Amino acid sequence: MEKITQENFEDRYTDPIERQEIDKFVCKEMDRQIHRYIKGMRGTKRAMDCFIEQLNSLKTIPEREKAIARYIDFNRKAISGLDFRVVLARAIANYCDTYRYMVDFIKNTRKVAFYLNRIKHTYIQFHQLFEENGKFGLKDHEGKVLIPAEYDFLRTCYVYVDSLSLMPVIVEKGGKLGLVLPDGKNSVVADFVYDDIELRDEYPYFEATINKKVVGYLDNKGNLIHE
Image (tube, rainbow, N blue to C red; front, side, top):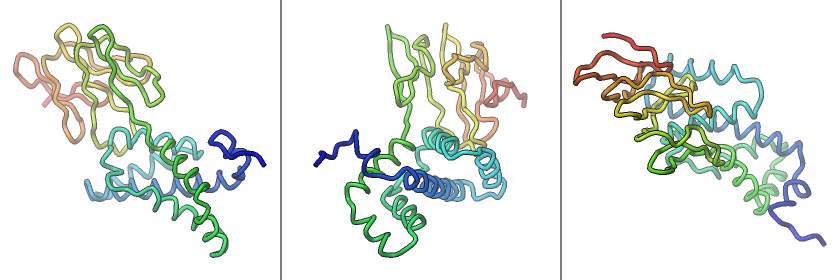
């Protein structure tokens, strides 16, 4: 009898259709969790509608999974206290067509462990800062460089963005601050001309200062909006 390992479990002990359907129902549950978070943070219909519109524009489950994972990465409170076992149990209940089948599924501890690991791997994809030669950069959960280590200071922007848009990072270079997108291309969206950039909890997200005077606000595309 073949020994069960992490490497062979997916191919030999789960069905591709089952994985596809469980992924779909888990994605719906994670979508629901973000809805709850939005409601708790703002409670506005506009914010809810914006999130729904953006997520619904994504046609495939992998696209939605990636978008939700990125959202969670920059809004980590969205899963604060979330028990992934409950998420999986709801997905299993939606997938199974009989009560007996559902009970047998949940009793299969190895299969449940497989899907729990799959959920965490899919949705918990936290980026991390790294340092090289005294400079700082940003990597994704797999170690891919999002921003190269060429900045004196780097501040990740944990901010609620219901449009699922990619948020820039506050960085310092040559004694001045600017904004760079963590897109793997080192895209500068706001030049290094500011003495200070403060993060705000609402659009346009950044307060820009030169010579101790607020000169306006920067949006996530680096556009300066004057007061």
